[in-house]
Length: 341
Image (cartoon, rainbow, N blue to C red; front, side, top):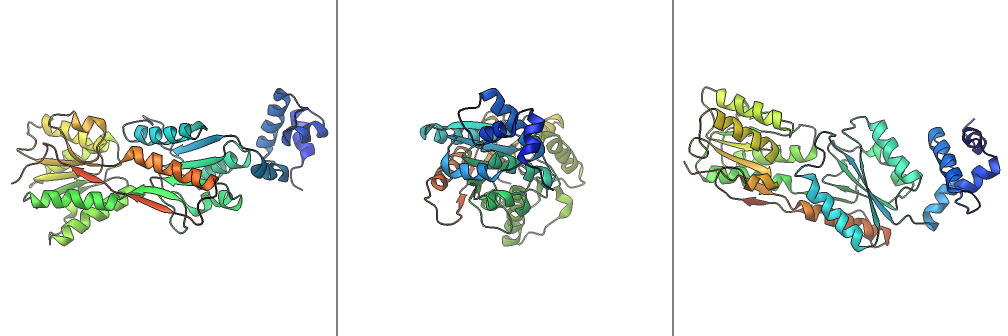
């Protein structure tokens, strides 16, 4: 037998009638009692049909951003412009904003539970999902079944059409490597991002396509598997410089790793770009301030947050007939970290 409202009332220490009034948002219940009953319902995973009915009747006037990102430096150079874009659109629509950082959850059941709870207990009118790790269909099934408005930012969900906004990571990577090839570089190293992250996968494909188009062999010895963190940028550059024939140029899958790689190059007594050229990806603020300024791929991060929130408000106002994917262009910003051979 499933959990009933009697179980909720018992755990909360109130009468069944009081629990019913609290869950139906009636004014005859004090706020303290209401919170006690809702917390009991959460603990027991009790989901009465009356809460579902409230979806069509009440609004919280809140937009939530649920971020499955690293708890270590979670609001770095990549995330802040995205969040600022979201906040500005939310404010323009006279809504409140809720940021919920959940860490790098790789367990699908945990992700699903977190997302479902946000929708089930009416904590927001709409949801923006930002995940460092790829999302799966099973993680958003409950959102789909409840017809809860959500948008995926900086990614998509393989196997299902969802509303999402992401970057042209493939095109940005392709442009970067072709730029180096155009400067005469043929031996190009690559410090990748994590192999199971969508943006990283697309950047790897762009790198490979640039080599293929220019008839340059793909040399696995020039590839180092990074993870978007500085430590792997350092390790990757140390590895590439230790090769019997080091690369004349290196493409790094994000600026965070590229900045660490530049430090290693300088520690080795080498000069940029005289001894080695380097290109990053993201164009975080520090990229233009380092010596020499870093050539990198600029992502319209603010626009990504802005467009995802506009799309969510379209869903809330019933202005979207079917799921829409928005792909934003990237741009190569040429600075002083590269030279022609």
